[in-house]
Length: 230
Image (cartoon, rainbow, N blue to C red; front, side, top):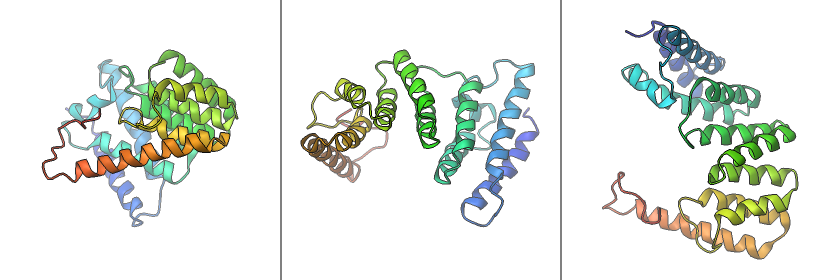
């Protein structure tokens, strides 16, 4: 059935969560568990090349015994919070390499990678990465937003503003699909000294946040319902 190493992975993830709450001092368990996950997948593919070709297949392939996707999200967040950026960059690269990704599904990983490159001071690499991503997915707001932050760092404000204008048609109205760009636009306008534009997008973000808050507090709210402004 399953590779017996998943049991070892399970023990390591238990250590990870103990480490998260301070009961386990050795934080190396996060990277060890991640590397073991990758090792198991590559081993399985020797006999079954199609084994979990996409990340979303991994829990189904292991009978949902280990909540691997849930742990992985926690792992990336924990490494990010600890500012262990070299480790996080390795993880992002491994995930992008090991799995195939349907259109846009790798956006969160790529956004993390772009952010990590900037945090590491690898500005040229970050620019090249974002520009290639934007060329490949010109309609992807996450790719464009990663580009805005990168261009802010390089003070290429014209390029950043071009990205903002592509996804924000009306600065007074923030929607679910472009909220991420509104936040980046606020930072851009601050860097450019455009106080009027910054106030406008900040107000739109605040109104969006208030609307979302009221929506989720609605007693008739159903988690399966789409937000009315999607």
